[in-house]
Length: 498
Image 1 (cartoon, rainbow, N blue to C red):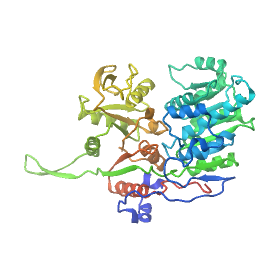
Image 2: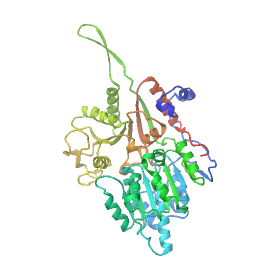
Image 3: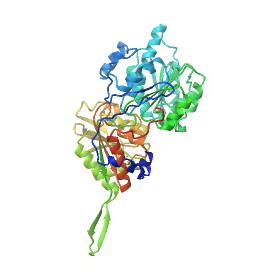
């Protein structure tokens, strides 16, 4: 499958030639229940919510949690993956939670974890000693902030949640002082957790649960500095390990299987598949030669660039869809800048689109601000623009005059987030609906494809993806992938014995 994304050879095309008719989306249908050092839970029903209600779970959530779920508009039923993982996380059993993006995995581990801590304090008749009991590691600052926000929203009275990430406005000294004052649940990036462990007073002696969110990217990348954390926890035989991911490449699965032979593998029905309510559109942006007559009456061939064709296609698609939020994915920071410049040329006044870049060339403060604006809020005053028709919104572009604000009519404004895969790692954009995703660059592997298209059609909602491709080989291979996705096939092989 990786070959289709990278070199686009014809092997996969021949094997799936029957799919080239651009079939309509059909219900997923798979029945895979196998052994993996214990039990494997595979949920058969293909709708988003479980048939169980929250009150049917064992043990059921407390009334306090039910009230919080009601305030969060979470409904009376958990998602499939939330119901399937509840008892294992609540009981302290180590597990791997794998399901497609937008399926509710964050709540799937946070809520039973909070319930267990509250039950332990109730049984003990006192609060904890202020030492960290759960450490949640995320690969990016954005995801850490999001997880911490959810954790604080659902934490029972007396359970203290803290966030520890890098950045100029988050000094380690302040975070060390926070640890000394007492923390129950720490959400952190791996780098900041390792630094606090070494220099800042983070003690893992009382940690009963370690969560690695987006484990697939962290396990395969040594830069995430997980060794120091693992060594600090190696002496604890009672620690629960919870691994969470939207994809499960075989290499990651095999490594976890060796390290944790009794790990319970819980996979949802959408793992390595696209959401059921997702529309996919392939747009052939291959250059076409145009013959023009020069002034000297000689024939001259001119070829429109792929970038210009993609720009025209993207603008047309965004105007035709008429949606409020579009995410454009590129494979590199340089391409993000190029796309931003191309789109600004056709909308210099910003009357059509509010362009919001989100990549490593943008400083963290500006990235956060752009996400806030994309989520429908003013970063300057904190007013929710979903509830106010007109508001002063600071423009988030990387070009032009910095710091200049202009009034934006948010009733008709189209927000466009131009990003690398940094925004595909678990970020849910403050809960707002992303109606349209544009793949400016074709993803480099199946995991990238699944994560990018998973930014829309989340939590049972509908969404649309436009893939801009060029060249015979890329168009043909992309057609195979998209048709396979429409047919409900796994876009990446499930690990052996999973």
